[in-house]
Amino acid sequence: MTTSLRQGVAAIILAAGRGERAGTHGAGPKQYRFAGGRTVLARTVDTFLSHASVGRVVLVIHRDDRTLCEAALGDLFGQVAVVEGGATRQASTLEGLRALAGSAPDSVLIHDAARPFVDEATIDRVIESIRPDRGAVAALPVSDTLKRAGASGQIEATVDRAALWSAQTPQGFPYAAILAAHQQAAATGRHDFTDDAAIAEAAGLAVALVEGSPDNFKITWPHDLARADLMLSSRIAFPDVRTGNGYDVHAFEPGNRVMLCGVEIPHSQRLCGHSDADVGLHALTDALLATCGAGDIGTHFPPSDPRWKGAASRIFVAHAAAIVRERGGRIANADVTLICEAPKVAPHRTAMVAAMADMLGIAAERVSVKATTNERLGFVGRGEGIAAIATATVVYPGALPE
Ligand code: CTP
Ligand code: MG
Image 1 (cartoon, rainbow, N blue to C red):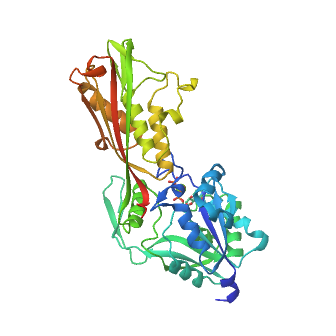
Image 2 (cartoon, rainbow, N blue to C red):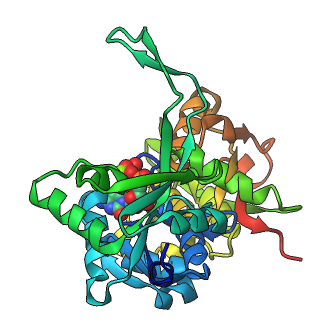
Image 3 (tube, rainbow, N blue to C red):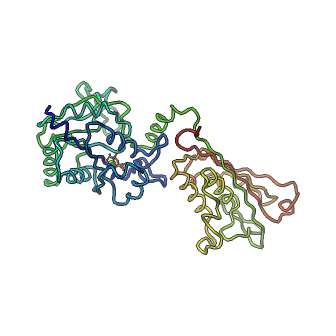
């Protein structure tokens, strides 16, 4: 390999996808989610910026994600050239390649932002295998036995895996050749290439396979994010688990139904309040906000604001859950205790748990609703109102500070 190729290496990081399979959970596409206390994107970008052989980094993002991107990268934002991507991975890559045309590098690495565990050695192996007339991709030999399924879902054949590899990124190419290959693919109206090696192959450019890494998996499904977090968090002695509590009271007034924990219950009175007066969900909103010092329900939904008149309190819970998730928090459980003499809560408990699980985006087994009377003591005992207390546990990224 010529020295000039090695010196003129640029990297394109593809981050313009919507991450639909992994889901956004109110915190943006997967590349903006947290794993081990840092966003996936920052981890990926940092690896390329700190690689000694990579001169420039072009980051391809979706036009709607600029604010998310700046927040995710912090200090690193100023060190990358940001361009807007296209509707497909292929189109996004072409935008990245075009952004380099002004001062073309000798070779270019193309990498998925959704592979945050790419390591320096894999990048080295790819760079070292690029030739003026050849690209190189990180890949792993297939280790599972492969089956071809027939229409009925039964095995039709066992496929010989001896010559099969699964392709990862980075994929590296001589710059001019891969740009020409991409332009040719776009010009012929083909937009279905899922990686750049396939585009190079279609254009007749040779591509070498170099050893990738099993850790260099692509975050695709929700469990991949959990796996990424686990890989990084297993090194952490004390995870950052936080508990918040909330308390609320609403008085009764004449009416015929109450909202409790997201469920409407016919009753001889109603609860008085600016919103739907769902005392359980108000306590829960405060408990969630308390886990990240984000104030209380009144900070976010002042009773003086006419927008919240008659509002469904599930909005408050969903908003608090989104704030928690923006900070990388994962809700571990939520528990609400309703304190009232009437109505009877037990017949509605399953529906309440289901409603809360839905608004929090967690499994029903992580949600609990309990009820107790006040033994006829005090204002609750006299049937003047309902009180609620709530507890939420949220696991935040990274370790408990020293
Ligand atoms: N990508 C991109 N532009 C697109 C589509 C994908 O830059 N129009 C990027 C993604 O951000 C990701 C990489 O290409 O880093 C691999 O794509 P994939 O895993 O399919 O990500 P998404 O398209 O975001 O996810 P999904 O297909 O589940 O929506
Ligand atoms: Mg995709």
